[in-house]
Amino acid sequence: MAMTPERHSAGLALLLLAACHPAQPLTEAQSAARRPADAHLAALYDGSCRACHTHRDSGAPLSGDHAQWDARWAKGPDTLLQHAIAGYNTMPAGGQCGTCTAADYAALIRFMADQPK
Amino acid sequence: MGTTRRALLIGGGVVAAGAAGLAGRRMWLDRDPAALPAIDGSGHVLWQNWSGTESAYPAVRAVPASADEAAHLLKTARGPVRTVGAGHSFTGLVPTDATLVSLDRMTGVLGHDAATCQASVAAGTRLFDLGPALAAIGQEMPNLPDINKQSLAGATQTGTHGTGRAFKAMHGGIVEFDLATPRGEVLTCNATRNPEVFNAARVGLGAFGIMTRFTLQNRPLTRVKKVTTMRRRDDLIDGWDDLVQRHRNVEFYVIPFSHWGPLITHDETTEPVRPRGPDTDTDGLAKLKAARDVFEFAAPLRFWTIDQAVADMPDQVAIDEGWKLLSNQRPVRFREIEYHLPREHQIAALREVVAAIETHRSDVFFPIEVRSIAADDAWLSSFHGRDSGSIAVHAYYKDDYRFFYAMIEPILRRYGGRPHWGKLNSLTYPDFAALYPRWTEALAVREALDPAGKLLNPYLTRVLRHG
Image (cartoon, rainbow over all chains, first blue to last red; front, side):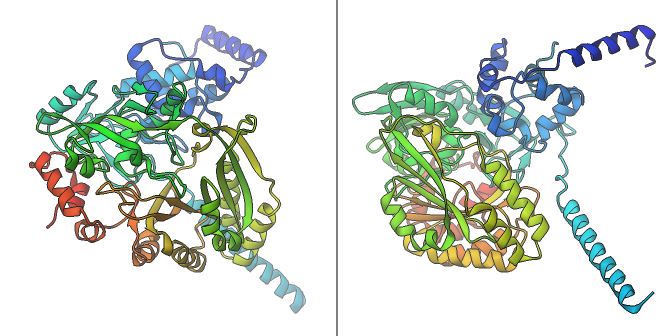
């Protein structure tokens, strides 16, 4: 898709905003306080993701921490979904969730990356 | 050009080429394993265990919310029906192309008795949640394993354990459980009610049914002091019997290609709380890997380098409730073999294992773990009837681990070891039958509960069915 001048301007503005307001790292406590609003997702999150994604020592990016997630999100949701299901570096395949569907993983990734739907 | 200069140039070129070749070899070996497709041709999502040794594309994923739902599921679902917790087992306990069951809707502390210090706990509760939940009612499990990601059912069904002379493995604290069976019933089992099932299925590999609830014999919440200190390897090995007697929980690691190793002790204390600091194990492991990468073929330099790095490391001390200190985050994935040996043979076997690795396997850099576990009476417990000393050898998840079977396992078997049910081993039915005195009785109980073999996947068929 070709980029229009308007899109260029919008993209430039976003970049400038990001440069002016670099994401501040979250603390473990701030990260641990987050929970998906959806009850189904919250149960999956509590049973699996939270164990690592709220503890810095786990090596996993803290849930909601843009300082850690934004570069990952830039790879694209499909790439992150593949990493979540099949494993990548310290991320174990499936994230220790025995019953998550692909849609669940996608929603959980979006929640942890703190990205709007 | 003079002869000497030419020789120097040629020699330097050979050294540089050799170094480049070794670096290239290491880069090649360090590549990530190829990822499996996230979804198969039938649209089924991949399941893979934590270490990446086992995988499957189950057609159905089921999440029963009660024991009755679990029993109905077992009666009606297509087999093999396998139950998964956190997927931390290295062996093929979980893979099924049919029905994979999660206990994630059966979690939490269901009730407790302060007088007896017992608690009723849903089987899918993850250990990282159980610690704080029990602490809130003034209780704790007597002991905990090194990692706390597992579900209570998964950990106890595989005989998962911590360390400590007087402490049984986790299943040693189970005084009652509810088991959903393939006949569609829910059995409550304890020492007097369905005692054969209680004895046979307490460590049951998820092959007797689906565990849905446990009553745990806990103990009052205690504060412990954790001390991690570097000691000379010979002192650790020679002093192990004394260390086991002197500390409530004690373990040590042998760092391969070093004369040193960390000793980790936990003892009860009334000293003020001193929270644990940030994890340093992961960084330490990265340094051991770096030493391996550079000096893989120069053992003396590797010994010297690691010794210099670790000898003067300061002690680490933390004081807190046990559930906060006994388990650890383990972000670096690995493969593991662990055997439980008669305690009197543990050190002799350890010496052979270390010598074999340092003679033949210069690629190994993960420390070798040494622990102590008390006997129990569960029929399929690796600790059945004998106090045990464990030896665990690890391999980085990108490294070859076949030497576990060719080199390590024969040593551990020669000393009468029994493998951890969740960790890599090559044993099959006749091997286990010779190691477990109540094997035949336990399997008779299993066959009565699951005559059609609905709970058996190919791995469990090799282990639990003869011929």
